[in-house]
Length: 425
Image 1 (spheres, one colour):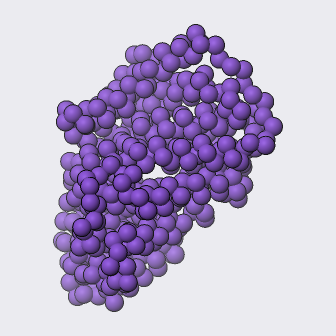
Image 2 (image 1 turned 45 degrees about the horizontal axis):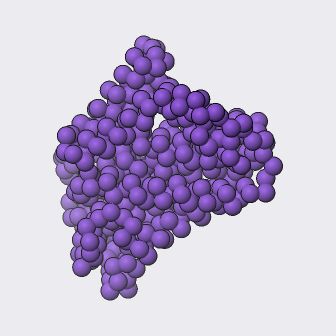
Image 3 (image 1 turned 30 degrees about the horizontal axis):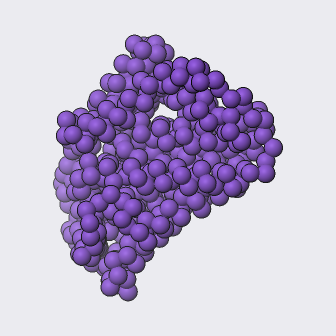
């Protein structure tokens, strides 16, 4: 019954048009009232304690790094570098979008920021070259959601904090699945575009390719520094976020010289606003997490999932299906903050490796950003590409299917995720 009260309160508040953060808080307070344990001090303590976390300091710095990267010219040079090497192929601008999305994902960790940057650069070029606009927008949107899977990932940061799972292990485990998502997009793009008539770009001479590579090497060094530093234990994920922000600022200000005081102020402002939205969600989710634990909601959800209890693989698949369906109506971060405290006790009880589950769960939540009707990345690319959301949905469908098949593949073959052997007992 307590699970029904929590879910009913959450959905009811959302249907009234309440912001997600406050809808989560309302559902937690309703659960308190139902149990007869309402205490404003408990609400305040858990909210403050939820946001007062050293690891969460990485969120605003990674967001800031992404803003510096886009404003400082790193994104454009990555696109130029990809264009020099694969732009001449049949449908080459599509492969440029995928290659650039994979590299940008290793820099910012934000699907919305990557999609906006790539869309602004590539959609006009693809339209001018005769590419189908809605399909081009769909490809860029599907490429953008690789960002939450490839480190540094804000999704892994939030999941690691809420689930008490090693963020460094999550980062390392996300590399191969993120690359698999990119490969699935290459295959899907080849399939859907093989009969289209394009205006191919001229082949770039090797000297020009080397110059493009030289101009992009500063941008390419950023993921090497972050992942290498984490792997060698030089810094923590929070410190890695600070290093990423400083590096992007240094390159944009000193090397490429495209940042100035006005653009830096604009980047700081956007990062502050975005971070405030994320952190207030985290604070309210921690209140809900506390009440979910007190009310034994995971046990009730576990009873609903009991038919799958005998098979850890089927149990994870059922949870992934729930996350996929919720992704159609909820944004990426609320899904993580709402479902993680519910699912993790069940995952631990079933003996499933939490790192493996975290990767598959985050991938599914990321796919939710391109599923209709609420997909936030779809709305971003529709706005940038000047197409209707309906056309963007049609364009993204083949790529949505391709990336969903990667999740299914990981459910069938967990070994593709780099985690300790024996992901279930």
